[in-house]
Length: 264
Length: 264
Image 1 (cartoon, rainbow over the protein chains, first blue to last red):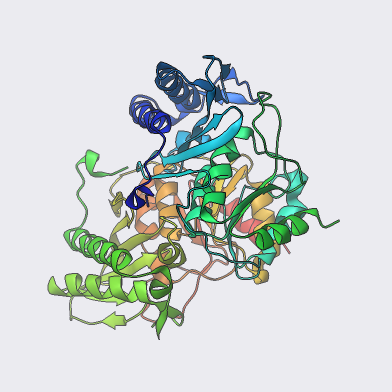
Image 2: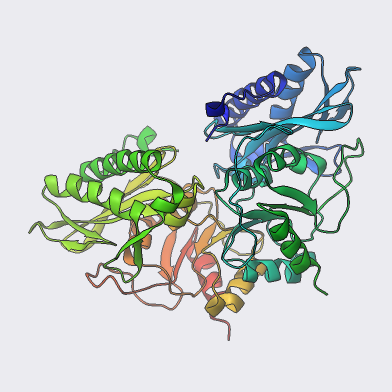
């Protein structure tokens, strides 16, 4: 499950961040109950409440990254400026609800941006330390190549009342759906070809850090990341921005999924 | 994630079966491509086509169990009679579509029945070798204790056209849904309290081996396994029988989920 077999090592700052996240996650689940891990301890920079487990892991990652001289942009603390050209966008625990409750599907995910352009990414599964990584423009994994929703294996962000109709259209058009509750793992699975696509079916839930790694991992594998509503995905210090990410093995499959989401 | 901390070891025949499954699974994914693993190689005793990965793992498990003198009841080969009072019901690879495609969420699952009554169960995650086990009547894990669907974390078998309406009612009533594609892991997560319930929302997809471990693991943790349509769940050599399993932290939550599934 690693790209390392192909002799393409992860960015050293991302590797250090993943190491820090793993240690802090293991410490957190050993020391705290699920209720303690799920406690809302502050309001994050991204505009959502932060759970205790998010903050515990984020603090460890920020320490590791800033010690190497890079800036950090993270969901809870926001922008930590080290006057570097290199910024690391991190989601310390993607799939926080899973992590806090004991469903072993949550990831650390990070992407490096140099002067505002994403260049490297790494997503690591906190339960197993499986890691997926890539560098922009360097072939790594390979997507499935599937072009149509019919028969496709599609992961979806869980539905909300506001996007139930769009969610249902995608779910019923696909061959097989999954809801894993961890967007960054879903994107890694699209990159490796294990699934054909992943989408937030128009609920505008995705934040910068939910998609930053996908923006590197998936194109490097021949796939695409687009927004269901056509907005550009870009580095932005305003963490209250939202997207509906559609991650797909091919541009054709992404187009069909966007059309299903947007059908009036 | 193990019950071993509580000094309650798994049944030795199930432990041997899980060891055999793990070895065969690792060998299969190392030697074969996803397309080879997903190839339909025979029609199983349960009435569904058997994938290559199922057969590879099942053969190893049958060898391990029959060497210990027990009968086996398994999805592909059916009934292997060793004239023992002890029968092991196995699902060699639950979540076969995940396992074959590279989504690392699939389990070996087995239950021991003595003279037709389930007494022990063990489910093991093939990607990590995490194991969950219990003995009937011996307290092990503890469910969440949640009594209502509102706010509940509910896993669902993926929807089919024939149960879309019932599936939608459960999905919209729950607080948070997941579709992991692995019923036996879902049942283990209900037992440990990581999620509140798991259901086949009335599609009658569940076979004996999808639910056999749940019939031991979940009651031992204070939860329940019922069929959405009120049929008894019991050992039966006719593997074409189907159920719509509802696995819940409490009888009250199971009742509410059955009512949602059956609403006219």
